[in-house]
Length: 258
Image 1 (tube, one colour):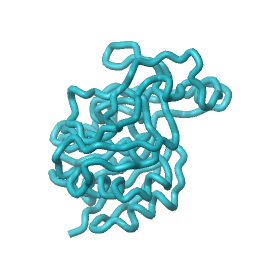
Image 2 (cartoon, one colour):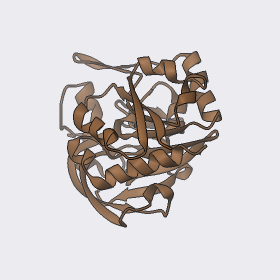
Image 3 (tube, helix red, strand yellow):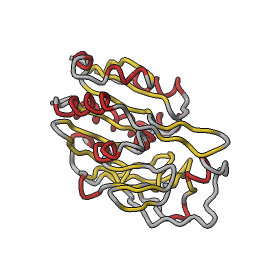
Image 4 (tube, one colour):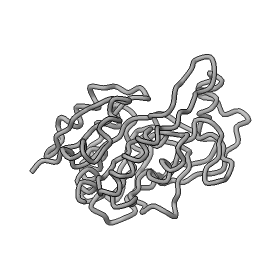
């Protein structure tokens, strides 16, 4: 029997046709695509009854302004309650790539995902954090660090060209699945705040950031739900990587089991 997923996008640009081709060609998975903010109406136990899992490639709660920094909006209490009810009911979630930046004004969202990409310096778990870093088109080698259904059928190592993040990972709260051999240090990344606040792309002059985690994939549970985060998936080059496609298919299958 096919799995049926709710696929949610919007908030960050991406090349649509190559992205949806991945799901169109995925065996055993059907999907309904809804953009934010309309997708929020389906985040309820009643509406989700038709779905086995959610795949989020979105970035809600952020409004970008060309002449100033981004504005962060907290979700409504109703949305929070219904989201947490989904987790208590065991609905699984796969968060892809930039989805780790979603709902920056809602601290619990980072706890659900297992980390956070910060567009601006801010507080996380009561500690002041620098804005996160990004680097496009990185050729790197991924190592599988756990024998798990999500990594089943993958080689122990594989190469991929993709965007990487220097971000916050709650390593103590997640089960590591994938690690990159890239150097997660400030000199290898550009400041996110310089782009969205100052309009300076590919800039890290004077930017200070501690060395970060090399984890680019993990799983965890929250409430009764299975959660997966995959940093992979920035552009058509990454979408076309057969190991990314295998990871995504496996992740959907794993989170779909309640």
